[in-house]
Length: 609
Image 1 (cartoon, rainbow, N blue to C red):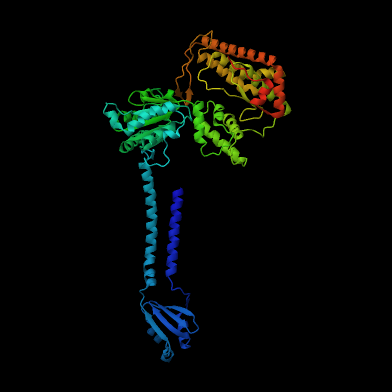
Image 2 (cartoon, helix red, strand yellow):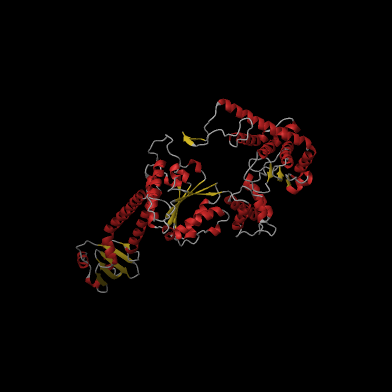
């Protein structure tokens, strides 16, 4: 519809231009008054005419007072005949200048050709635009089965290398072999080694899988074809397979090169579910990818790098040797890696002198590279909103909480009663977390709403952890339930503010039993199969491999873990009631307590021996 309107406007504009051109050259530039033959004869008899010019079927008279007139005559009549027919006295013509001009100038040709040319031009322009629209539609239809991969050439100015990727040391070492294959394949072929067909990058969202794939291409100095797995999938069966064939055809022409397929789980999910039939578009696309990777020339020097954060749903055929037989895992960055990533993202940001990136890294466990980049960006925005020229630690710490919990909800004004309940709730979390020996130290307590939370207690581990004991998990459940217990102890009833805590505590207790095998009564085993399949649009995450009797025992064991944690939290709240009241008083007065202010009330946290 938009193209049709556009073509009509262009067509109408051309018509106006031609009409204006015709009107411009259609006349002689003067405005002549048209009169009859009788009027001209009377003017000649009165000797008011100074000059007469005869052009074709027109008699152009110029009067002595400067006016111009035009008289139309019949095609066969001459000026002499007209004068003779009207019995004009020859003496009246003695002083009159009569000039005859040939009708061969621009006016003649325009007047002769334009009446035929204009319709022809208008029809031609109309046909041209219609044909162009049809050709555009045909070209789009012909390109429907072609790959939409974006190619980055060898000379791309914004190319990324391993120097631009902070952390991920093991991943870069593993991928350096791929780079060497692309740079010097002869060295490997002499020893009988074949080029790796596929590399699968596994990691949580934001860990830098795409960035690392671009860095491999930048290090090797080869073309980089990037496409998302979802771009293969269309509603018409066979289109995705056609795009796969076209992508590999282009890659072979540009070899040595890298094909990068992001989110390959969009087309690489496990087949054989028995749902959807054998002509499913996604399955056809996956089959074509498998065929293309098998059909590679051993010396083609085309390497496929794919990325996903869901390796559990991939088809086993993709992961067999000869296809994606190299798997590179990108973990969440540790303390040193987070500091290195912060240095990369802070290069173009003016930081205050007191800003320590190591301290920021210590306060951001579990943050991925994307989270850290977003953190510094939010800090820069916050500093700009305050009309500051540098980014201070205050903005960075505030941005950490914004990324973790959401923005401050300053418009949410609590009543005195709700404020008191929230203060006791958060103080309960903080007191139990502080006095349990294996819990992380409290960094901040606040009753200012952020995101969906009415208040929050921020705990940060002193070092990165990769393994957790049963005791640590039980203490974490006690900390989660501390707000619930405190409300019950102080007010005699609980509010809806503990809903999220209860849900998380119950989920953690269930994991202790079903995933980690930490239940004494049920023994060291897991419960439930985690294989994923899709049925009627719903993902079924777990299939039971246990009886109803065992399910009942699991529910009882969850209750036992919860009761044990409640008892532990309640005991601490009663023993440390004096500290609880002091923290609540400070929270109501200041709304926020930093680590130093909190420990000034309750003392320093004792380190576990």
